[in-house]
Image (cartoon, rainbow, N blue to C red; front, side, top):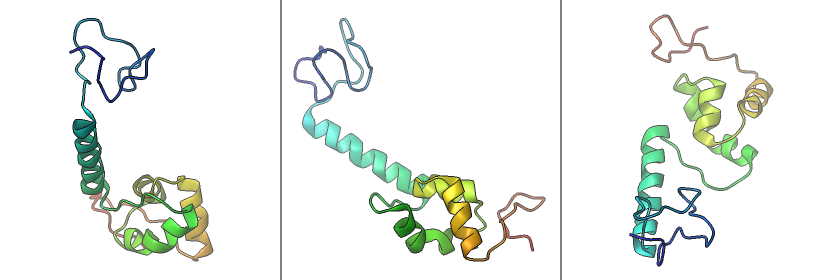
Length: 114
């Protein structure tokens, strides 16, 4: 299909492909299909990361979810990825809470080493 009527058509380029496809485009979607895709992407993120916090300041995200993730044995970088904030921000928050780094044990199963 061409770009005409595609939800992702920005005029000069495609929002997905970043250029116009000649002939057919694998990114073509109606508005309804685009909404379904976005919902599927959000569900996948929640499945992969276990936590989806779409809004809020980094502090609000950390206040809401940090201890759950920390107690699972996740490291600063993993917590930052799940909460979509900087790992250094997570580190500051952890140190302010007087908590040590989480370190993966020899088997890498996420247990907290003391």
